[in-house]
Image (cartoon, rainbow, N blue to C red):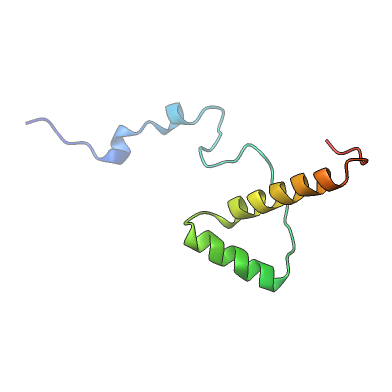
Length: 79
């Protein structure tokens, strides 16, 4: 009967990680952001209800807000 290998023995970490990059590392840097506590609680609740990360909820909210702002201020030079 062949010897069973544990999952950790089967994984070759060096071949999975190229140039020392972590598979969990995001490609885009993030910055801390301060929000009012009432907004924080709402964002936290939404993230929980949608089973997603708060940063994803904030990204969506900010993208929508920026898009709306750019539409209402067409004379500004935003990209």
